Length: 74
Image (cartoon, rainbow, N blue to C red; front, side):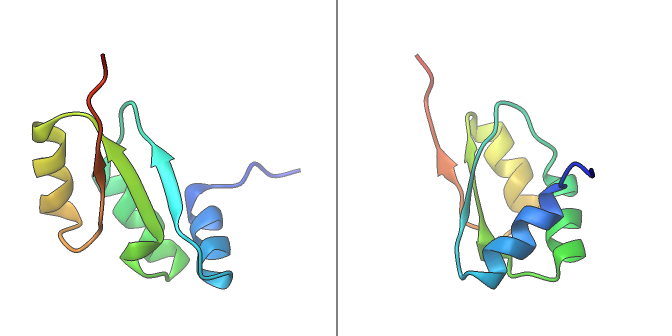
């Protein structure tokens, strides 16, 4: 049995016109971009949660049209 990758989940979201909420404690926006491209899906299929404004700026630099949610822990 193969462990699904993020691209697999994005493909499934695309198939069912859904959006994936990604609760990210740490993440790599470049890897998210690669997964979206690998899935051949819209960048709007993912909705990551981002904890800091610095991370938000990094995310925007790589995926400028992809929505995201900012959360404040604590």
